[in-house]
Length: 183
Image (cartoon, rainbow, N blue to C red; front, side, top):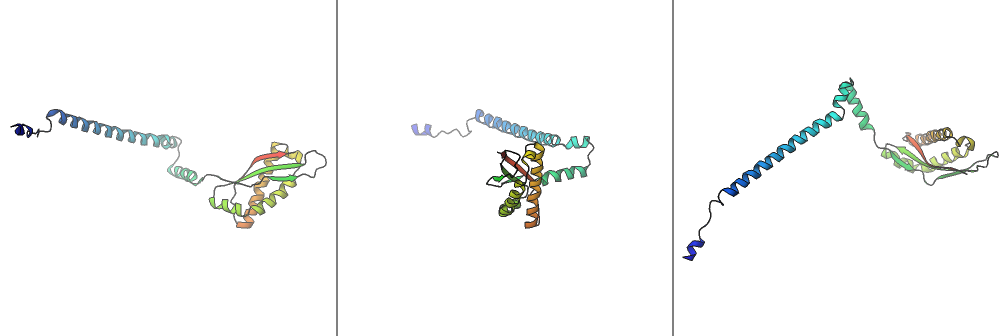
């Protein structure tokens, strides 16, 4: 008879408590999913508003203005820096000053990744032009910010001239002096 007692099984699945916990779990999951949906929708709506959707309309911009603004943002690629290593060292031939040497570290900026390789390829021609340019400077003029800015713009023009001669495209849009020493 002991065997008959062992055969009694609870076919109902444990009665009420397990069924209630499954329905509670289902309700909790449903509520969480709904909250996530509402949260995502609110986020997308606020992001659209904060990114300028209503601000542009308030400013009176048309759809054409918005489209051109998006094109400008999309076409603005990150600036790639190409170091013109080693630093340039030139001597001055001025007799009226104690300053005899100029050392400049130059980096070139371009937004076109293909131009990076072209600048590296034509580095000897660029360096030659810049050595000639730097060697013909007046040390007194270079002591001022305006003098340095002038030299920077002349450097950019010189690099663009070499790049245009060698590749047909200037390609370089900016030049930076990362070190500037006169002795």
